[in-house]
Image (cartoon, rainbow, N blue to C red; front, side, top):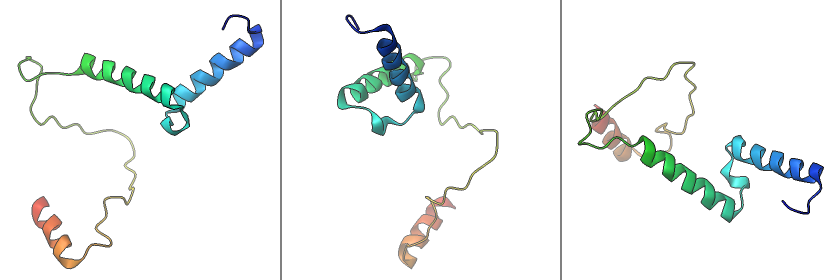
Length: 92
């Protein structure tokens, strides 16, 4: 940010930080989004546990604490009887 007044530079840094920390990837430019994806890839590889590692656990499941909020996105509403039967039988 050479040649940029100090207040403008601070404001720009704060805007970028707020964009990044908001979690809303829809407000990012393509270049910013690509950078975010690269950062996510690095974190994924860093945290990845491969099958040949001692910490590996097949089909690991975790219960999250806190209030459970119903979203409604996975409701069977709008399915015809055949689709409903398929999903019910695959769950049971």
